[in-house]
Amino acid sequence: MATNTSVCAICDLRHVTSRSIHWCPECEEALCTECSEHHSLSRGTRSHKTIPISQYQSLPTFVTDLKQFCIYHNEKYQQYCMKHDCPICYKCIKEHGKCTDVIPLEDVIGEIKSSELFRDLEQSLGDVLENIKRIRKDRENNIQSIKTQKEEITMKIDRIRTRVNQYLERLKEYVIIELGQVYDNYNGRIQSTISSLKDQEHEIGKCSTEFENITIYASDLQTFLGMREIQSKVTDNESRLKSMIANKSLDNVDIQFTIDEKVSDILTSIKGIWFNHC
Image (cartoon, rainbow, N blue to C red; front, side, top):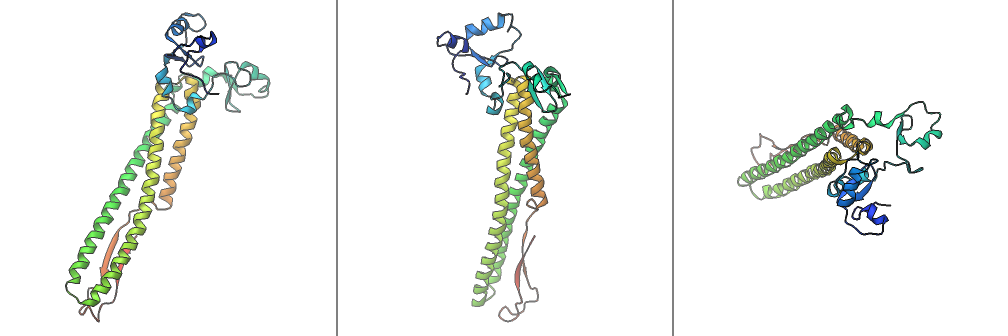
């Protein structure tokens, strides 16, 4: 069940309604100003670092949903099982008795925000977001270039039309239709790619914001566990970019108009009109 962050947890136990101002990540409780002061002076909780409730609420849901107490024994996580890749409390030891790689949780999460793994994820987020933006801009430029090419070809056709008779009018209709089909075909493909890149840009941008908030406000355990969620999204977006490259979705498209240069009589000697595209 979701934690009520609007009401002080301690006051609520005393059946007193008091608006929460602070959040203790260690206790996973919302505190009013008075209870927060008592919290900072109590021997058992004086080492806890509280944060404004507004900062806690800025964390992504998948981070705030991460619990620091064992869901089976309601005891604080103290160790980490490398074999099962999960934090455990002291009561979980019986279930992990045969696991050889059980180490203190502090050894895993200590200085996590300054670790190489943390910095690598931060770098990956920046790199993927930058690549997506760059590729999206390239695709938008390609849209503009083929639009310009389409306009130039149309003008060229109009210049030719003034030199011929009714036959060229019928020929023009055919060429414009073919040009439109070619343009619509590749415009649709590129627009689809841009749409996908915008989705990825939004997703990675959101991850980047969430990552910044985790960096500032999340506890070490929340940071450690939350990083995997973000890393998964980064890896997925990198794979999607590689897939776009592999299936040539990011290759440039050009439209070219070609007409036989030996035309001497438009009514009898024209041999072909076609578009070159790649």
